[in-house]
Amino acid sequence: MTMVGEMWSHLGSTMGTLMLVYTLFKQFFPHHLQDSFEKYFNRIVRFAYPYVEITFDEFTGERMKRSEAYSRIKSYLSDKSTASAKRLKADVVKDSQSAVLSMDYNEEITDEFQGVKVWWSANRILPTTQRISWYPNDDEKKYYRLTVHKRHRELITQSYISHVMMEGKEIATKKRQRKLYSNNPSQNWYGYRRSKWSNVLFEHPATFDTLAMDAKLKEEIKNDLIKFSKGKDYYARIGKAWKRGYLLYGPPGTGKSSMIAAMANLLDYDVYDLELTAVKENTELRRLLLDTSSKSIIVIEDIDCSIDLTGQREKKTEKDGNEDEPSDPVTKRVKEEEKMESKVTLSGLLNCIDGLWSSCGGERIIVFTTNYVEKLDPALIRRGRMDKHIELSYCCFDAFKVFAKNYLEIDSHSLFGEIESLLGETNMTPADVAENLMPKSDFDDVETCLKRLVEALKDAKEEAKKKAEDEARLKAEKEEEKQKQKSVKEEKEQSGKDDKEVKENGVALEAAEVKENGVAH
Image 1: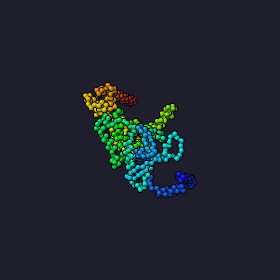
Image 2 (image 1 turned 30 degrees about the vertical axis):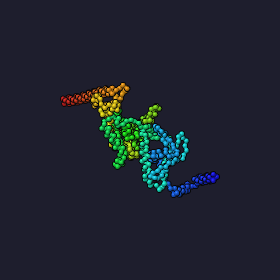
Image 3 (image 1 turned 90 degrees about the vertical axis):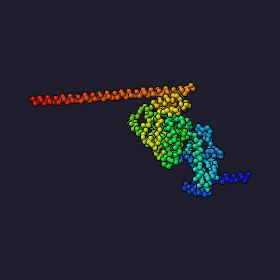
Image 4 (image 1 turned 45 degrees about the vertical axis):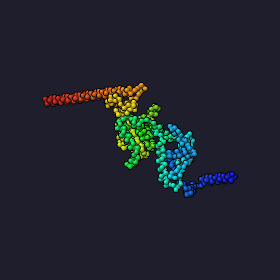
């Protein structure tokens, strides 16, 4: 025991001496000598150290985007960490039923691949500058380090890392919970646990089986989506970014939002609801889209209302700039808010969805919805940007049969013939048809719901007929008024011509009389 104590005493003295020497060296030696010493010292260490170390940082590209490799490694190591790591950290994920465990910082676990042993460690570097904050520093550098003997370098770099990436992606796909994202204002992007997107679990129940629409069109859309999701190699071969654009247009209440939900459920994609009015400029839009994941649908609903993309903004701004400064504080604040409105341009939007930046990431679907397709700039919806144009119109009989099956659990009824005839003569949105078919109490049976729909269709038919008659009458009245105005104008023109002729004739007669009188004299 005495010998062990002496050994530890000598070791402590040696370590203390080395620390003192190192401190003096860093403090008093010139920097160029320190660099030279560290350079040769590292060479000696590398010569004697038989291992290769590979680092995977959390962020790449000046922290613009989280590294895909880092995320996949984290997924790959999650189960292994739970089984073998001695120190674990628990993260409570929102809407998750249990805590997610991973290895703590400076912890190390082992893995084996084709008989070769490797070591993984989770690390972080804290910022060197001190600052006072209510929250932990959010600019720390996190990374994973892979260590392996240098004799296995080729196997690790050519096979093992690819294996980790594929396995990590599969694990993440199986465990991930699909989410609905909404973009945050840019002032909320930075800070502790802040991000460009906020999210909730995506739990919309709509599927293509529940969508009430033309059966042939429904099948065509499903086949197109499935073909796209399997088209990675195809898009690479033809030299196009792996993305596809869908334009959904039609009157309000025709199922555009339900279509998006059904698309996401079919493909198992996340949904990003992009609110353009919250984006200040093109650069912010680019950063938002860079922060979206693959296997996602990026949605801009009511794009004709979201932002002015027709060039009228500049005219409006110039006009507003010439106005006098309002004295009322409320009016002044409103004016200031108007000036702070989004400056996203048509060119900026097009570059993000179809320019060079659109290739940053793959397997994305971009969806625009609008009630008034004629208002959109043709450059925005041309093929290649919005590849497939889908019109969602008024309810047809095929759509009604889907509603009847889903809402009332029937495939046929004696009233189906009358309903088919009325739907062919009347424009009623799927939302209105569904509302009339939905039982309103426990006493509403199938007959009651169908009769309610029949009455609603008859009322809509009468209202449409009355509206058409009123429009025809107004048109006739306008035409009649127009004819009257035309007649009055013609009468005035004719009266003017007559007056002119009388005047000219009077002048001519007077001249003739003067001439005759002159000859007589």
